Length: 37
Image (cartoon, rainbow, N blue to C red; front, side, top):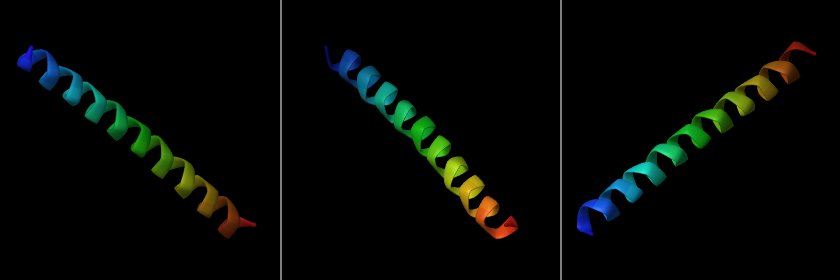
């Protein structure tokens, strides 16, 4: 049970990291587009 909880926590952490990376890329693209115009 404990190992399963650790696995779920790790999975959630990885998912959050991936979502954060996507968000950062989106913000950077947005800023670059504003600078280019």
